[in-house]
Image (cartoon, rainbow over all chains, first blue to last red):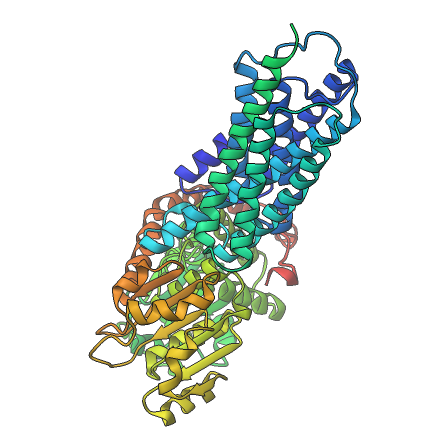
Length: 248
Length: 356
């Protein structure tokens, strides 16, 4: 990330495999960490806010690995890395790694619901990143002020295609996660359910508006950023509330 | 053995002078007869240069005689302002030429391809031997390094190529783009050709004079559209190029807005190269519309050129390092036996066909 920033400032950035390799290496370490943690807990490591943020950062890296090379949006790595660093940095710095009191019983529906929802969040995060890239590129084209980054960003239509596919992918996973949430066998607070459905409705509205050509690509890009911010706030709320409500 | 370069370029000779010294079919033989062990002639639209290696000094006048288009033994010595570089200076000059630093448009890359072609044909004919081999191989390496480590080739520097670059930054692959050219003048033709060269397949031409529209359409493998029908075309096209001689704007914000309703998900790129302008500047405020007039295109071209010029110092530093290194390596080669020098050292192997 620092290397890309320095190269962009020096107007010497050459898109290459470095971003992909750097994120790939980080992904391997993240996977190792989550695996060790999962073995220690005897279940999917999603028992507190710390693990949720690490898992989310892992999901973003996973979706980037799957989607980035397909669309050849090489600079997407430079935009993805800050988000991964932010999520993981917050998880490591904030005092949120509170061990869950008592051993949590294994609940495969709950683990499936949580993990698939977080991978959906990863797709929404990348759609948000592609949205930021779209808005940056669009602004330069509108104002006729082309900076060094202009030459490295992908074409608008490619970015919009990436946004659309990431949104559909994330939406399908999120729907799966939402439906599986009703099978966890535990009563869920109605506020959480309402907020989760609210996020689903928001993304459904974005996709519907895009599909029926009611929203321009610029608006869809902006809504991706708003949607992910809302989804992240909801995730925080759900996990925080769950920790507060857990028995001492 | 000394390396030398004698030539004329756009810096010191006009096209008329350069035309007189583009060489003739006997140039290579004459150069050999003049005492050059190795020699090749690099001829482009901006330069005519002889690069050679000779045991004894070959005079500039002899070279000029060899280069004369018509075989003329009486070329007066001051007939053209030939420059001459020897050894290290010769290497430095070729490195600058191959890197595009000596070109009319700084950073252009065409010269490298021309130099590679010239060298390869000289190598095949035996006109270039181990000395020119080392010199040119190094020049190609330097050019590649300069291109990789500086922004000397960044951005388009002509109005037409800026427009096409922008189109690619909006649409990506232009093969599926529909283009309407409004106006059938020379500028329209140039822009249409630039778009065709990047893969545009669907090109429509409209002009007040249907005959001129048909003529241009035939030239650019497009189809002519009646002038009354062009506004309707805006519903389906992706790129609009306008260069009519209309006194009043042909396209305003209000009439374009109604056309855009059905195509909200597709951007429209408008290249207005007419003076006075054909398109109301306020059109650029519409969502999904990107309007560039001649001034904005020129401004981007100038920015690119300025950026390239800023990179010249960095490129010169790379060249200076290679000149010093090349000077040492050529001295070592000169101290070797002639038998050894027939075999180029590792890393200076002949060009592969794929590099040409």
